[in-house]
Image 1 (cartoon, rainbow, N blue to C red):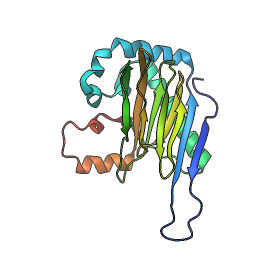
Image 2 (image 1 turned 60 degrees about the vertical axis):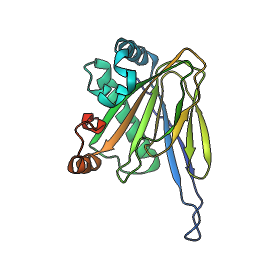
Image 3 (image 1 turned 30 degrees about the horizontal axis):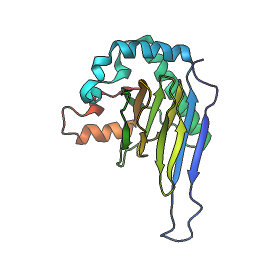
Image 4 (image 1 turned 180 degrees about the horizontal axis):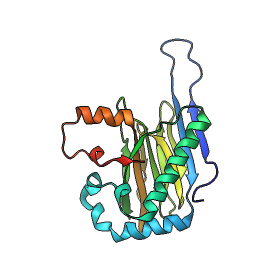
Length: 209
């Protein structure tokens, strides 16, 4: 099947506020597993194209537009996980979702500092898929609560709000490969098309999920 029948939801939320200044927050994250036969195929063509990832070239390609059979399967699995997340928290799943993905190849001594993928009115969901077995974690900076640590494992896929800051500590092993991606709604893409002034914005590379 490629992905488990149902992933795992983790949720953090504030109590109901009794005044205007009381904190309000709600964060959902979804964890799923992709079987290793698929991951092994992905890491094979990822390493074949390693020169693409150097010098911040991640902004200039979309792995989900590549002509590999596994890419189509990955898109199907990501869409299913997204729909399961929406069903679990009781919201409508958007029908027309766009995706852009890239590879992050960490080498020994590298660190992925705190960052977020999108912080605007059309911010949606992002995700990462761990492609290698490493003793590492990805840490998420939750509103008001601070850092929450999640363990990485080969085949682990995580969906999280694109606005959620996250990072990875310095790598002590030789290498760690992950596939990162952003999901964008049709409304978000329409807004982008109407307001974008750049000819090189990475979002121009997005494709239908």
